[in-house]
Structures are given as structure tokens and as C-alpha cells.
Image (tube, rainbow, N blue to C red; front, side, top):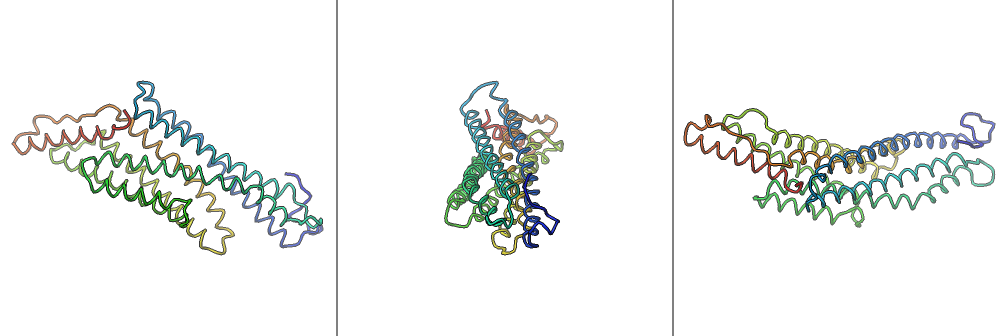
Length: 326
């Protein structure tokens, strides 16, 4: 970085306030660079994950797989668009805040430089919101779709999912309602969907233990992975929502803004990555998985009925897991 400024020599004509402001800008630039590293790693991992998630297309191009591939492609494009805007925004800030600072030279000094960088980066700031919103809507749609498939014969979970999804779309970031409310509704949607998957896993586990099958099956492993990944995603969303609330309603945010940038970067990466992880897990069961119940478990009529129900539930759960990915 070139410039005719000095952070520590008093003879350069800079006031203590200007030196403090430049130090704050340097700290912000440091955290911006850390956020850029997160974004760059995220888009690389996203591209790799999409390649893995679309491997079943090598076998056949079914309608469901084409729809999933289109969703993943849109996610990659919108996330790449957002990362490009963020990169450009940060580079403009660094260039005008540092490389073109001319303190006390009759050109406005530091304040004019900051205002110039803000004005030039403003279109990029507006553009960043659109791809982030599209990624959030796609992510929620894929998660809700997966929970919806698992409860095809239950009307209440489907009704609740539909209601929460409509509410989340209505209170989107582009509405007049505060943007953080959309993030909160999205968090509730994902927590509810993850809870439904956990309920399905619990019912499946109880039915299997009733017939004496205690070994964890592939279906149970997939359900547990969906629950764990959903819990991690909800934790990241919760952290982002809390920091967004604090950042919005706090007047003194000097040091908190930098933390908010990092958490925002992690949140945006997780929003793009979570549906890809869900599809990868679902593709593990692209073919039906049946769990054989040995005849020795059915010693009585009740045992035979439980065994039949366990086998039926296991097959149905496996088929539900693979619906939409085959």
C-alpha cells in the first residue's frame, strides 16, 4: 500500500483523532481480509461439494435429479456473485481508505477518503443482498422439502412447515419488516425441520429396538447425520441472528462490527453449504435400503407383527430418504 501518511510520527500533520481513525480502519481491513479467506474457502468447498452431490447424474438424468442439479447450480452462481461483490467492496475500501489518503492537504483528508470509498462501494453493497437472499430461500426450501418427504402421511407437520415457509418468504429481507426478523423465521423453520427429522429417527429407533435390533443401520446413520448437520447449521444461524440484532440496535459498535463481519461470512458460507451437504447425505441412499429381520425374532404373533412393522418402516424410511434424489 502506498500513501503519504504515517501512523506514528507526529510531524506528518495528522491529528490524534486522524491517527486513531486510521488505526480503526486498519483493524477493520484486517478482519475484512479474514472474512475474505472464509468466503474464498467456502466457494472452493462449495464447488467441490456440488461435484460430489451431482455424481448420480452419471447414471441417469431423471427429472428430480435435474431439479436438484439446477438448485445447486443456482446456489453456486449466486454465492459466487456475492463473493465477487464482497471482494470488490473490500478492495475499494482498502484502496481509498489507505492508498489515497492525503491528510490536511485541502482535499478533505481522511473523512473525504472514507466518504469516497463508501460512495463507490454502495452499489456493491446493494448487490450483495440479492444473492444472499436467494441462497437463504433455496437453502430453506431444500431443508423443508426433505422434512416434508419424511412425513408424507402426516398432515400437521406438513401444514406447519408450509405455514412457516410462507411466513419466512413474506418477511423476507426485501420487505419493510426488519431484516433480522426474516433470519429469525428462517432459524425457526430449520429448527422445526431438524426436529421433525429427529422425531422420525427416534420413532424408527424405538420400533427397531422393540424387535431386538440394536445395531445401528444405514438409515439411522443417515438420519443422525442429518440431525447433527442441522443442529450445527441452526447454531450458526442463531449466532448470526444474535449478532445481527446487537449490530442493528447498538449505538456503539466500534469493535463489534469486526466480529459481525466474521460471523456473517461463516453464516453465508453455511447457508450455501448446508443444502449441498443434505443432498450428499441423501445420495448415500439413492437405492432402497432394506433391513432384514431374521425369522428368529418372530417367535410369537406379536413379535411377528412387530418384525413386519419394523421391516416395513425401515424400507419406507429408506425409500423416503431417497425420494427426490433418484
